[in-house]
Length: 157
Image (cartoon, rainbow, N blue to C red; front, top):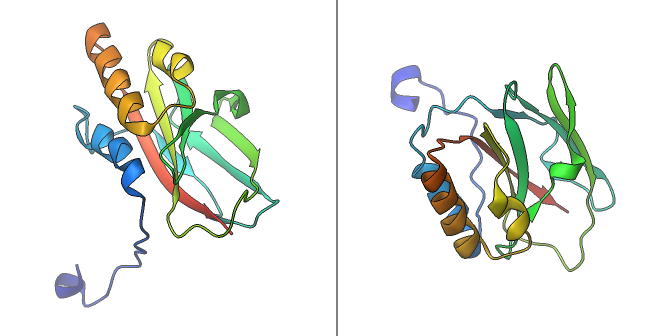
């Protein structure tokens, strides 16, 4: 882009942990990648410990939306209970607190839109990303579902 426009794009690269890579592979292997319809709208992606992670997931109409956190240790947690649905989308407000020292890598949020609830989301809540996303991909394939996905990274300081 710089060669074409003369400007350097305003991108920021931040690392994810190796334990989180299964989530990235899951997204890249989705049939619709990269043309998904779901997307996150978040004003702040750097959250002070003790503050709230707030935002919206848009284009959710007609879908069951599962909301997942993949932390820096690769643990996948279902956050579906934090979603508040309106005609405009699904909003969330989640308290964030550091439980240890600062973390160099990002935390990941993943929205998964499907026509029906997925068993893996509740059955494997709290599992490591590698096994979780293998099981999720297997359930989606067995049910013939091509999910709508969106991912965003954030950090807690």
